[in-house]
Image (tube, rainbow, N blue to C red; front, side, top):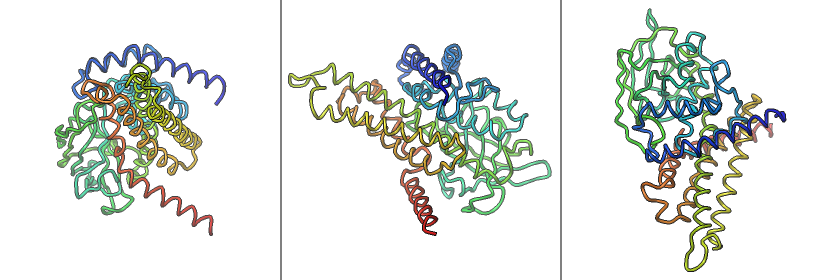
Length: 396
């Protein structure tokens, strides 16, 4: 990183911090930290403010109206944005849109970018990513797909079901992962399709209520019944969907870590403020050794998390193998963020857990982070397998 680029990132981070604290936090408080029923004109107003501040869409290339920052440079800005649950919405870097933009910049044809990526990057529309399936599908694993896309003379016909699709209700389009060859359990033969939300043969049932309140609408079920799409709606190459899903996953794991570190920083700040201003049994709370240990452990978890995220980002930006680094970062950060919020709740006691308190909102959200792209046990299994494979390679 050059001195000029460092100064640019520092400046953008400070602008984001100012925007979040002066404008976005009051809006979050007004709506109880819940974006499910947030009016779209509020979303647009927040995005206009971010655009005016010069911090809109930091992850999107300049050709599509963004700042074009690489993974390493966007990390402190995403963390500053995540200090508020509404920050990523304002900067148009929230899930699932952020991951879809990343994917479409790399894979979409010029016409697809014109029709879908440009309005998405500008915040004029929203999108969703449809991969997770109910039983007998296999949750977050795109290698076990029961949704199928069969080739026809005019293109493809999609049949199947997806569920827990984040933000589908009100989205303009979905990126749908469907099997185009092979059998379930085969780690090939998946293809990604762009599907307009108003396509005949698609039903959206927004009936999955979860605790993820920072996204618009709710978790929805998507039902495909002989839905027809043309060949020009294939995203990337046919049968390469599993590879693309992994690429998207490595990116979004880290951007999730960045945003949730903002939540951890906010929780730790709330706890320190409480400890410095409150007293117990005639002593300032912050003078108690037990409280100081909780505060110190929060700072250690945040610092260690940043280091793991930075290392994984550098590998991704350099085009080096990064699956192990991103898995390690996601696994550690997901649990570290939870620990920070939990410790902060202990310091703040009952007032911190009341329904209208920010710590309660943060606790509600960060618990879901631990299962956001699959159980952490599954990720630990993958980490161990890679470590054993590398040991075998060294031995040979």
